[in-house]
Image (tube, rainbow, N blue to C red; front, top):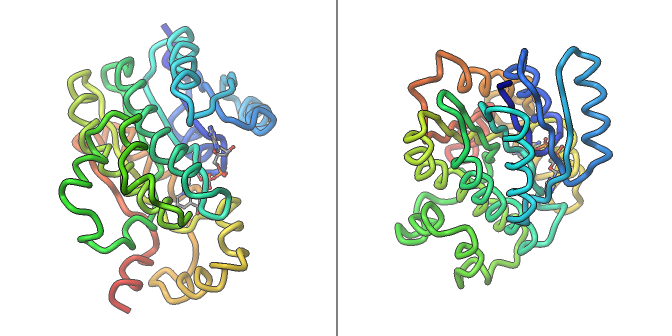
Length: 271
Ligand SMILES: NC(=O)c1ccc[n+]([C@@H]2O[C@H](COP(=O)([O-])OP(=O)(O)OC[C@H]3O[C@@H](n4cnc5c(N)ncnc54)[C@H](O)[C@@H]3O)[C@@H](O)[C@H]2O)c1
């Protein structure tokens, strides 16, 4: 049986991670935008990787189940790189919650049932969730985000009330990080690990939407300029961290949320 790395979302962060952890394995690249996956498939194939593509809409459980079936037919699922998502300027709040919060919860649950021993999963969260105040969520709300069934998440009255896209994004990404904690226990029973990487502003292309957004662009440019690194991050830097988490040196890390943002959170909290 071949080892399979499932890559959900085919943007630059996904590609950077896939290149580092998929040598000698089969990559299954899945995205809602099939033309994007086909372009990325071509690039990765020319770089020597074995790649196939499929359509997935992570806002649909049926679609994720179909992805799991496609993946397991290819071989043993040794890795899940979950990067599919919408940024605040790309979507209204409730749609964003369905993709970034609900979709991620279903991905963890569905792949947690088939992940192979020694396997690893990573989701790209966001520095943005670290900008929420420490007490932004009650313990009850945090536990709900970690533990409720994915469908129940969208039925929570306080989630249904969210109509601001940025807040929806922050809650979704905080939800991803909390969810990783509870999923790590289940994945651990199969000998596998799962972690969240909370990324800062990474170029391109999702970041460009934010940096040029009339609403928030100036805020982001100032925020990066004032940070310890003084710049945005590159997909390769996220890829390096994911490679560590997937590799032999990362085997003691599970259920963690790792912030990688050039110190933006630090300088925002304590300027
Ligand atoms: N780029 C950044 O600055 C940054 C910072 C922090 C976190 N992130 C997170 O990293 C992840 C990847 O970001 P990126 O910059 O590579 O973005 P990207 O837009 O290049 O990639 C996201 C991909 O998700 C796909 N997608 C959107 N909705 C989908 C759905 N319903 N089903 C399946 N696929 C869907 C898109 O087609 C796209 O290919 C996202 O979750 C994002 O929130 C990005």
